[in-house]
Structures are given as structure tokens and as C-alpha cells.
Length: 127
Image 1: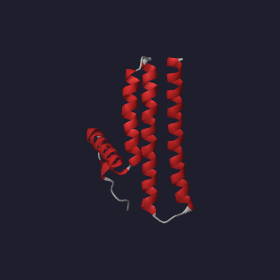
Image 2: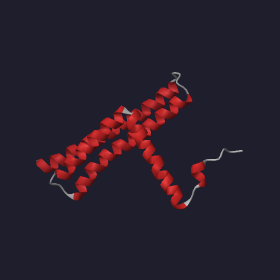
Image 3: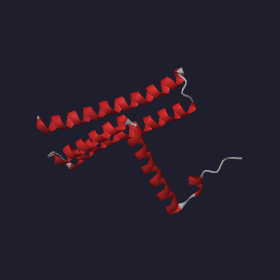
Image 4: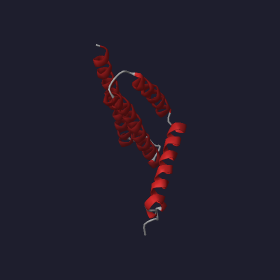
């Protein structure tokens, strides 16, 4: 017999509210336990303020803020992956290392994308 998942038994607005509060719990946990998330959130706040102050189009502002938000999203996915790997076993294993390295590489590539996006938009604005 399958264990009952309390979240799956809810429907309608109750499910939406539950999902929202579970998501807030995830953000709080990331803030408490993930140093990289706190750093990236700080960059997101500063970057968002800068993007809003720049004299660029609304679309360019959206792109600059969106790519910073994407870094946070990928960091959360990476943190979830690391938590699952650690939940399975804290023993060192090549597959566990690969999983964590793949997640880390995804964050790195997203950061490179963010940097390149900002560079192109700022270059076009000022040169």
C-alpha cells in the first residue's frame, strides 16, 4: 500500500495555499542553510535595484532581473539535488560526486549567462 501524501489529497484553493507555504518554507530553508543562496540573493537585490535605475527599456530591465532570478532558481534546484544525495548516503561515491558536480556546473553556467547578459545590455547602453 502506498503511503498517503497529505499534500496530494488537497484540492482547489487549499492546495494552492499549502503549495505556497511549502514554497516559503523552502526559501527559508535555503536562506538558513545555503551560503551560496544568500550571496546570490544579495546580488539579486542589488542587481534588481541597478536594473530599475538604469535608463533602459522595460524589456531590458526584465531580462536583467530575469537572468538574476534564474541564478536563484538553478541554485535552489542544485541545493535540492545535494540534499537528496546527502539523504541517500553521506558516503563518498563517484555517482554522488557526479550528481553534485552536475548541479554545480548548472549554477556556474547560469552565472556565466547572467554575466554575459548584463555585459551585452550594459555595453549596448553605454557604448
